[in-house]
Image (cartoon, rainbow, N blue to C red):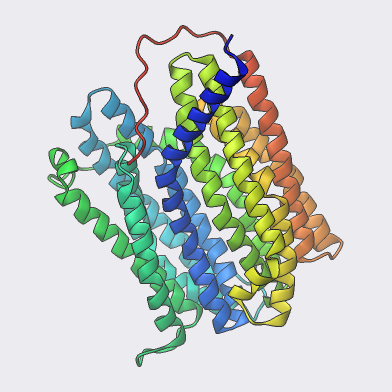
Length: 465
């Protein structure tokens, strides 16, 4: 039995490994989250109606992102499995089949966005918001194929433990989006003022720049030269695509459980008018940015948990989970304090409208309230994935978000007339309930886990850079 000092030293070493593994992912996720920040700040300084329209349009656009990310998350484990099994020569074929799957998904999702513009009225979106929201959707839909192909290339690269392009292209994308969005939204340099549509078109252009740059990197980098990823043509193969879907769809459903709660909340708040919708967009954008760090740390925890489980190292398994909890809870406590103490200042970055600013500052207090529970639920879920325990957690998440969070949000926000704050009470409750249920499930899984023989060799986990 190791001494307390030894156990602490081992935990500290595990925390360093987890953080080192997560660091590239943090930069990548934060860069992605900042896209919404740039869109929201530009829209907020254009007009409150524009910010409200971007809030509604972004909620519908996020459906597209959730579907693409969820299904295509089948790529990294598939690529890693082939590479680890010494079957690197099969990766190019898998990649080309992934492109076919991405193309099919993109076609369906472009059609979905086209239909969505006609559903804004039946969904009850406020009349003054609908035209600008439709403009945003029309602009951003051109970026769907680019996002699909970009994700294929990103996940291929990450599956081969090369994450630098994700960080570089994420930051570069922001450098494109900010000035281009400003020019198109406000109509500078002789261009027409497009409002919400301008930031939609700017987002599409940014996505195409990222996709083309990633393709150029894969085609010219010596790291991928032996793969010749674009060196030949392949027709779609049903078996391979079916296998990708079999792995990716359950992941997508799980991702959609939580994402769907936030999307539905945004759409319901959109029925309340431009001020609540604009304030909600500010608060949810801040919460999304702070979540990116927790998400990256959770993904690193999955890798460390899976590595320890595969090695049959029960003590290492528990250390990996504990390290994930300690780091994420510490980070989330800091972000919760920063949001709670600086809520007025943060809201003022987005808008000068007094009504929107006041409500957004209030909603940011609710965002601060769920920071820790959000961190706990994402680490619990990630640890369970590392243990290959996914079906029951999916059901628990569905219950927490859709049987607790959404009914409470709708009941308070719409039924009792609490408005946007009532909707946010539902978000806090759903995330807190998910943290509790998933934490209990993780405890149960650890207790029920049978002893495993220690692996003869435990391969080191690449750092991701």
